[in-house]
Image 1 (cartoon, one colour):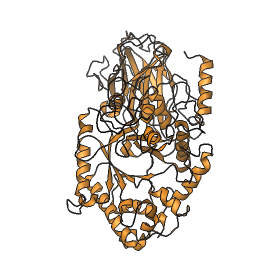
Image 2: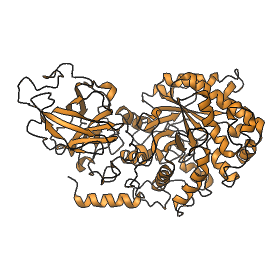
Image 3: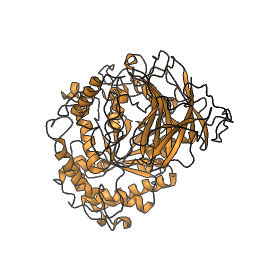
Image 4: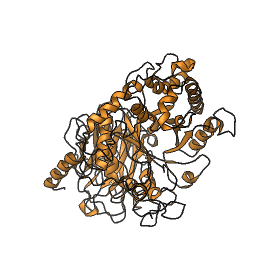
Length: 625
């Protein structure tokens, strides 16, 4: 067990250095759009027609591409009918990814660049042609049918706030553009942003997720790199107040933006240091002050935005540099590109902790890509072990099931004592496991995880003495399992918002006459059922028998093992989506311990994730290895 003093110090450190992110009473705010499937997505930039992602053998979640001025007619090589977009959608879906459109057309419209943003909005003919193309995109997306994420105009809204002196009612030719669908919108800067919502509704493109880009400098102070000692909440309030009439608050369209989009940096940090003399490296330490140039400060800014706006975050165009790069222009050779630490922060030594920390401030997706030529790329980002850095680590993370996101009002427990699984309860015990299936200390790259394979992830196939009937086993009262629950709960306890106390029960039994009843109390979110000090030998596969009730709101389950300090609190998990299980029957779910795992385990158990306010009981039995 973790020393109580250590646990207390860890909790205090979390509260002090993370700006009380995980202990904030409200928990994370805002719904998760269905396209994100309630788990943290990981995606990449890739041009249409390219196949690196497909051939990488990594189950990426999303694929993004810029749509600049000219996309509608394939930059002069096709009809002005949006067929190029339709091809990108279809190609991306065929490879297994959600297509992401970074819509970046406004700066390419005639009349200048970024500094002329407001002037373009005042031009009725420009706005008419511009929004005709937006409408065409949405029509193509509707016909496509599957989820499409449209990221609206990076930095444009930040320039609008600058150029209007934070006045959302400054003139813009929106209704005046003459588009019938926009006739009911105000001729204001706010109306420009609302037009995306109005056109989505008019077209009926309900499969489109709309993300509004938030620039970290939009308030007039660059909170991430320059104005480090300025309080964050006033800067957040200034931007949110400007954005409310632009589609964050109730408006005439009847809808709002689905998510916010932020970019931690547009180029590798050492590119700025070496070519412009600017320090853009963030301190990775979990002890860094939120008044320092650090991930902690950026995370606190994200959290305050999430709490104030009620919207979750997508982090986009994250630089791909790592500490093994050569700090030279990337022409495609091994290790070329500039150093950065953002990929290492999320997928390095403390990747599990950092992914959870950022999920707790509202982040639902990590999208990686170079923002300019010559930067580091995922094609040649070799780490010190000679392996492609992001490819290798993301593969293990995603194949193991990824990370389930916290439900509204909750946070995920953090390894080491930080975090709370329910806004109204004290922090969960430091040993509460993560759900992302990775292994520490290197974010899951030790190769020992089961890799998401499930020898028997579905129903038991008739091997149960009970044959799934739920009755006792024809009078047999013995159960030779390691944990059969014939005499009690055998040390298993429940944690997390969704679960009430577990107990032994005769209602169902896979073997013997009893099982462990796992009651769900109607609170949406996650919960764990676990036991300490299970003596599982290295490399063994642990099997749990799970009775899945019919009609439940269980999204998935994850058997897991958490080792102790001698193994650096290594976590091994195997996420099983509910679609792979059979309701009203016993299912076998397994987790394979890595080679060299230490015994006894700090914790062995199963994590459940639910949606909706459902009350009911699942059952565990016959835990063997």
